[in-house]
Amino acid sequence: MNSIVKLLLVVIATTGITFSWGQSGTIAVTMKNINGTSTPIPGANGNVKLYNSSYTYLAQANTNSSGVASFTNRVYGNYYVEAYHTPNPATIFGTEYWGNKSVSHNSSNTATNLQRCMPYCYDIKAYNNATNTEVTGQSV
Image (cartoon, rainbow, N blue to C red; front, side, top):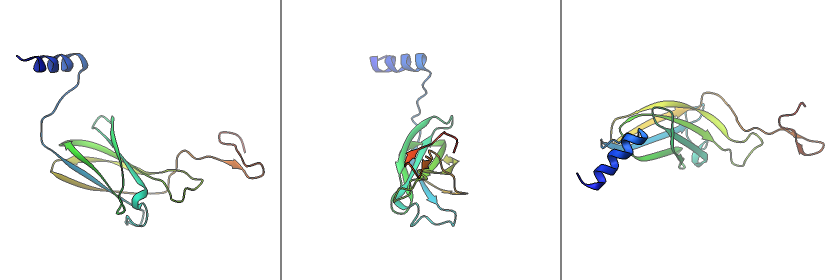
């Protein structure tokens, strides 16, 4: 047994990491707004995060002008995706969370749509107009 195989077996035995030499392909996620379109919003202002079947973060990709984010060389299997939109110009509402879904990736090109169901924001900041100071987390 050569040293690379021995090292690989030690890594698997001590870390619990699993390796797959199966087929792989591209996962393409199209972000769609409430009305079912991808342009002008999100356009190139979207971001999609990719997670494995245990919901462990793997990668993220920005959308192109058509609202599509792609993840290449992904081994066939089950994944989760989350979609975010950052308005341009930026607004006081910050980044919008558009939703998540599971994706079954089992072909060389897996395409899926993730449609925004309702407006939802996170990382919102509140300001006092009179003093122009942030009051996030305070009673107003």
